Image (cartoon, rainbow, N blue to C red; front, side, top):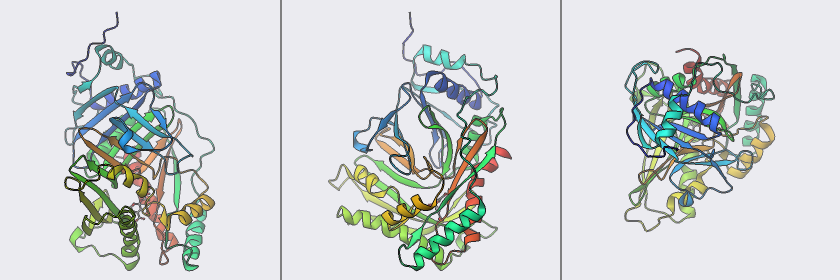
Amino acid sequence: MENTQLKNKGTQQFAPATWLNKLLDFAQLKDAGVAIWKLPQDNIIHILCDLDGGSSIDEVNLDDLESGFILAPFLAGTQQNIHFKADIKGYFELEKEAKPNENVIEISWENITEDQEMEITQINISRQPHLKLKKYPQIESTRKEDYIKMVKEGIAAISREELYKIVPSKIKCIPIKEDLDIADAYLRACNKYEDAFVSLTFSPKTGLWMGASPETLIEDKKNEYFKTVALAGTQAKDEKSIANTAWTQKEIEEQAYVSRYIINCFKKIRLREYEEIGPKTIQAGNLLHLKTSYKVDTNTLNFPELASVMLKLLHPTSAVCGMPKVISLDFLKKHETHERSYFSGYLGPVHMDQKSNIFVNLRCCQFSQDKAIFYAGAGVTEDSEPEKEWQETEIKCNVLANIIFHD
Ligand SMILES: C=C(O[C@@H]1C=C(C(=O)O)C=C[C@H]1O)C(=O)O
């Protein structure tokens, strides 16, 4: 007889990377969906598995979603919005500086049957490649000259006053070896990017994605607060302290467009009571950005659907799309030759312990059978220098590429 007894204390011990690789294999074997994530400034790795592979949602209404994990593309219609419910749920603590393949751990299961745990633990991950991913032969790296041309066309459209800002993106493909240890790379990214939302998601519908995002789209704690941020402007971190970082007019303006966009979203719903902090310089890996934070006290505000409404209004923000939104989307549809897929979409846990933490899917890559596909964009304004924007996208791709291929 099937043993469906629920358990909450793990009995099996493996190294953290082994656990995660087994989980990915389990998900693939079962056509299930799995989301693994770590919140900024936290060392808890959360695990969630939807045994039905996640459900497609035409339109995301945050309020209607059950507790789980959401994954949405940049453009609705190109890929599906996918929601994972929490059939299996657990977590473990990532020890600082611990090697992902050493020091065995137990997983603290919140929701799993003994059979399921047994099945996961018995998976043999030694065969290579242990994951069978799709090949995407049609996806190729964006050529530098094509990206530069697109940036120049953006600048020209801004000079003609059709746009204020545009965020052209590119893709960069790097071949991967069959024996690449994806969970090990993921856990090293978790260790390195303490301030990021570091995620690893897999489902038959979405494929395998990894990300280390610095950008909150929505943080919502029921009846307490709602938060969002305007993040833009990028420079490489050098030896100067953050307090001594200087920003050019171009970067200040670029970020101010995002702030203005968020304030306009608040205006649309006649929300006047919000706290605005910044812009401040923040560090995201080896990069610095300008960030303004917005916080609404939802304890006193009688507006329970605020997060749901704001999610629809905000995405995609002018941090990843441009300003004005509709004209920018047209520009990107016309000039970008690749699909953004889930890059610059959003993802994160929803309604978990009364909280939703949704992030913009940045500094991310998708894995295919033979290559990792990195995505990055850069905010272009009238004063942009195309070569510098290209360099910025290179550095952004390297946030994960350096971890996956070097460290
Ligand atoms: C588009 C990306 O990042 C966004 C664009 C930024 C910019 O243009 O300076 C900075 C942070 C993000 O809001 C990306 O990482 O690919």
